Length: 288
Image 1 (cartoon, helix red, strand yellow):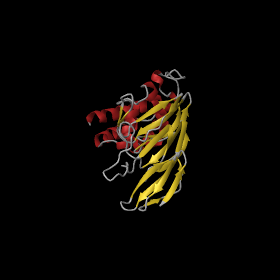
Image 2 (cartoon, one colour):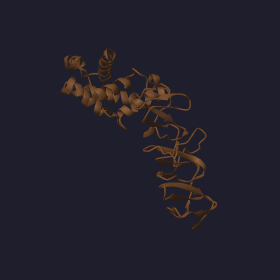
Image 3 (cartoon, one colour):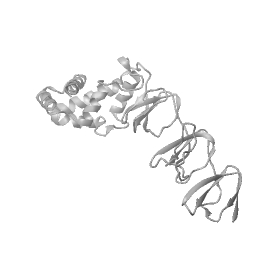
Image 4 (cartoon, helix red, strand yellow):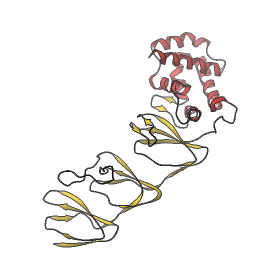
C-alpha cells in the first residue's frame, strides 16, 4: 500500500488493474493506493486557461447541461471520440484518461477594424443567436471584435473589408475593382480562346474553384463585398453565389451550347461580358 501526495491544482490517473479502468484524482489530496491500483504518472499540474485565451482538447469527455462529466455503467468517463472541445477561460481543470491537448493555451484572436475573418461551417449547427449554419456555409466575422472559436467552424483567412457603400461610389458596397478585374479577365480570355473552354478556366483563375472560393483571390474580394452589403452572408441568387455554384458544378450541356454560340461575340467590354456570363448561370440555376 502506497500513499500519494497530490498538491493543489494537480491531478493523477489511477488504473484499477482488475477492471482496466483509469480514473482521475484531484489535489489537494493524500491518496492511499490500493493493492489492485497503479498510478500512471506523477502528479501533473492542471490546465489553466487565463482570460481571453483558449485551448483545444481532442477526444473530450461528454458533459451534461450542467457541465458535469458523464460516466458509463462501469464508471469510465464517456468520451466524444474523434471530436474536439474548445475550452475557454475557467478554473484549472485536469485531463481525463484519453483526453489530449490538441492545441495549447492560445490568445483569442482580435479582429481589427476594417478586417474580417472568412469562416466556413464544418457541420450543421445553431449559433447562440438562433441562426442556423449548414455544413459548407461561408460568412464573415467583421471587426472590431474578439473572435471566439468553435469546433464546428474553420477560419479560412483574414481579409481586409471596406465600409458599407465603399470608397469608390459603387452601389451596394460592391468591390468595384474586383468586378472590373474579373470582368476584364472573363472578356479577354473568353474572346481569345472561346467561351465554352474558357468559362471554367476563367472562373478558376479568379478564384471560383470546385473546392470553394480560393483565399486571397478576386473571388474572395467579391465575396467580402457581397457579404458586407448583405449583413454578413452571401445572398442566394446573387452574383457571387451564381459564380460560386458554376465554379463548383460547371455548366450543363444546354448552357454550354449557349455559351459556345455566343462565344464569338464575347470579348470587348469587360462589364458586359461578366453580366452575360452571370445571366447564363442564373438561367441554368433556374432550370435545376
